[in-house]
Structure formats: C-alpha cells, structure tokens
Amino acid sequence: MGFFDGPVPPGEPEPERPAFVDLGPPGSRYGDDGPPSDWYLPTVLPRVACVAEGPRVRVMFTGWEVWPEEVALCLAVFWRRRRADEVYGDSWYARPGAGALRVGLRLADGRRVSPSDGEPWPAPGDGERPVVLREYGVDPGSGFHRPVRLLLSAVPSGGPVTLVLEWPDEEIPETAAVLDTSGLGEAARRAVGIWPELSGPPEQAAL
Image (cartoon, rainbow, N blue to C red; front, side, top):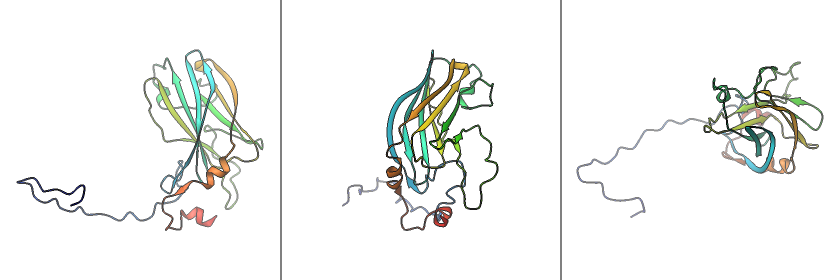
C-alpha cells in the first residue's frame, strides 16, 4: 500500500477520475508586458539597498530576477502615510508634474528608459527588439508596503545601471542610485527552462 492509499470511508463511492484538456505549449514569449514565466524559472540575485527615502517613505532595492534575455528590477516601497484617493495602489508612475513616484533607468551606454515612456519611435527594424522598462506583476502588498517589479527587455552589459527616482508627493527629489549588475550575464545563462523537450517560444527559436 502506498503512502496516500487507504480504504474508502463507508458509504462513499469511489471518486471518478477527472477529465483533462491538453493546453498545448505556452504561447508567444513577448506577447504581453511580463517575462516568459510560462517557459522559465528565473535566477534570483538578491541585493539590498535603500535607493530613496523621504520623511515618511522608504524605497528599497531588493535584487534582480534574471531571465534568458530580460531582467526584472525588484523594489519594495514602505510608507507611513497614504494618499486619501488610494492612487498608490494603482499607479506608480505618472506624467511629469503629477506628483506620483516616477522611476527610470540610465544604462551604461547612456540610453534612458522609463515605464512612462510611450512606444519607441522610430520603430525598431525587422528582428530588433526595443529596450523598454515596464511594471508587471502588480502586487497589492499591505497597508504599509508594496513590492514593485520593473521588467527591462534586455540584460544590462558593459557597466553599471543607474536607477533614478523622483517622488514629489513624498518630498523625494530626483535621486540616482547605481545598481550592482555583476553576475547578470551568468545568471541569465542559469535560468531554468521548464519545457526542455519543446523548441521554445516562437521568437526565441527565430533568434
């Protein structure tokens, strides 16, 4: 008898086996704003640093989630007060002058990206993916903190990355923090493929 085997309780029928539907392979890798989480388990590189603070708020950098061709920058925002209109629960970046938290990255080659950017223009050429920064995986957190994940559509190389934040409502002026990017390339190679027997997402196969 196996560990989970046992007699059926008196008066109860044998349970019927459920029916299953074959889902097929996961879909496109770049079909939405999130990482390829249906295909890979990322490598997690913990880093801990306070990257901005105001009288009643702290913004902490907690590390990287590293995918084969993308990285997620992980933040944790802690506060001791909230706006009465609850905008903090819905929007973490806004048009200039709105007063909400704004974030961006300055890459080693001088390029700047932010979640508030529109679609890249001019559009990239055939087969070229634009470098963009987007928030994903919205987590409500608690009444006193919220995790924030920002997905960068490239693995940084060639030097450090600078995180720039500004939060007028919380008396945080424009603040720059250099992030440790050491080991990102190796971490990308160590991301675990969940379905090695499949050829991979269509875009990855093309690349």
